Image 1: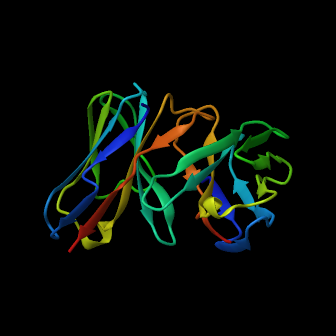
Image 2 (image 1 turned 180 degrees about the horizontal axis):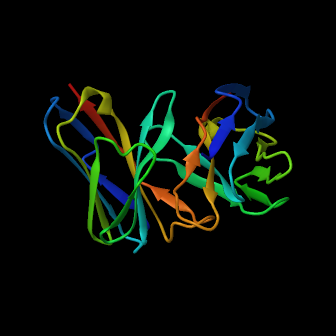
Length: 113
Length: 114
């Protein structure tokens, strides 16, 4: 079946550091790719998506580019703030049929002032 | 205000009791979902509903059933709860179930089965 792998389980950063979270996927078809963010006591919230090769998704200073050849969708942010502390999930969904989202295990990001 | 509402937020049940988790959405979304979230396992899909009375098993349906009699409501039922069903349960909805559609999640129900 489809799967998503996030390399980093936890990341600790200082404010204004550069953030990268690596996401690779395995899917039988051509999926849509997503990043979701989850704050304590909340459900996951949509951050952005991309649905075709080389498309860049972005929101709130975060960005990721769909790379079909490398099967990757790495999340980056140039300068993190303490308010970016959260758990980030990479996810995929089939483009042409309804199967729900398949999530990675998540990356806990802690940003210290 | 676009939201998914889950009730209750916290629930403690004894093993063998029946459990009903309720979910509502105010966006007229066709598709609704139930996920559970566990440490080390992430979010796993239990059931997906494409519309009223049109439900399909997800990745981990065993021990659960669902009911959707109105488009805006989707219930998760545990008949005879087990301790390994202790988890945080998230309901979600989307305009359609296909591809690049944004999925909206509720705040979750933390269920403890003792």
